[in-house]
Image 1: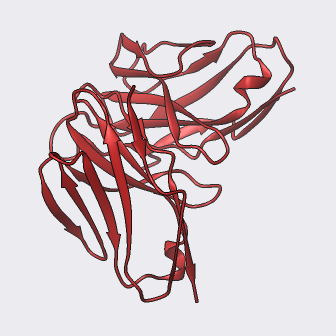
Image 2 (image 1 turned 90 degrees about the vertical axis):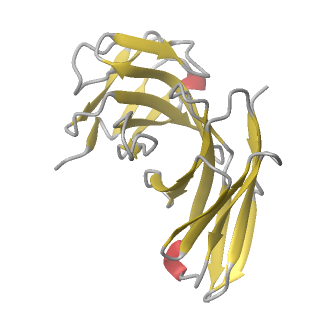
Length: 115
Length: 109
């Protein structure tokens, strides 16, 4: 059981480049989310999804796009990378219902540097 | 605005008990979660409180008081491996989670 898988683990981009961070889960969870974590800070919600075809904005959505075409995958797109987007990005999933509905399972993270 | 406040750092010795506090100011509060994160690692779930009172899970317990907008995580019989950052997080029932800035726990031998 792989859980939540994020790729790549590390990435360096130049200002203005675009890229997609991949996130996949094999637990059949309805809820998925993307967070960014800056040094010494907590996690800030970028976008989230409560099921295939449904996405919504979190606390810091600007500069990022998401889509959810399947239950398993929730990619995060950086449209035109900026140095302010240098951060560690975490994807998480949750059953969304039942006794474990409030437990979020996190991927290992993607460390992104924008030069 | 919505915010969760935690102390930035707490230090304790092995075998001791430590309490990490979290005060929140959020709209539509539904419950409070706690996560542990080791340096360079991913957050892992510890506990969740939807109702007032104490929830116990092994050496870790979590408490919530809705009337005081306050919760805490209690770690007993501290071990070196407990050195990590601890985050509280609130949810409004709509899966829009807000995290605190985290408390770095240092356990001394």
